[in-house]
Length: 337
Ligand code: NAD
Image (cartoon, rainbow, N blue to C red; front, top):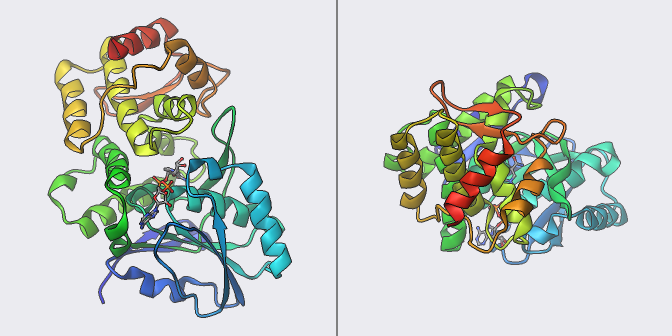
């Protein structure tokens, strides 16, 4: 079967991302040739199994975002040790962004690093989370505050696995897909699923290839995430990641207009795109602006606790430090009213 293949170009650590219906058949070819054991990290509700063609054992983690915590990493690593997973073996993460973030982080730290292959089973993981090597967990103080860069040996985006994805999770993935529109990927709405996934993977691979460690352009992939992460943390994750990012992008557009960077038409485009994917464009009413501002100051992008946002402007997206708190609060008040 012909699958689309995108290369993430990182010199000796380059790897392929195989995209298409049934692409999990290509998993065996992505397992490092010397690995003897594969620790398959997944969740109970994910109805897809994989065949690594070597000795394998399944390690289940909790079914939602709350599993993305340090305790899960410890329990995985203890399970790996008890089973006898060694340095030359492999972790295979089968799931959405929670599984690839936690499984990837456990692989990054177990024995100071074992190979990992991601089999992404949500739209969000296929177009974003499984690619680029960012792994990690949350703390009660905020999202993704502990983690490591750990590139996979390969990624499988089997679009057949999306057949079983609940509607809400599919929409959540579309929230991240909308982000790529503002990073310059055109025509996603008119593409078939496999092409759209491959186009987003290519866009992410291009960015990661030039800025693996997020010292520049890669930060732009966090468009909508400053408020998005604060909404997730303040609401104990009752909003999905993509839902929160959708609201965050619309907020960022309103903030950019208040700061004179974009016009009404650009704000309307944000609202149309996000609403067109069936996602909310306003934060939940019960959130308090002061709590959100405090959380946004803790965002990883923030330097010295300044308010830092990715903002649209005449030259496209850019990282803007030191945004005036009053402008942020006024924009939040406008959207919460
Ligand atoms: P998720 O991993 O929580 O998955 C959503 C739900 O769908 C879960 O209950 C899961 O068990 C279920 N599920 C997964 N695949 C399924 C399938 N094929 N059929 C039926 N059910 C299935 O959510 P997500 O949206 O994939 O990932 C969100 C996480 O990704 C967040 O923690 C976010 O921070 C992270 N993320 C990481 C990066 C990165 O670069 N590392 C980028 C974006 C997002």
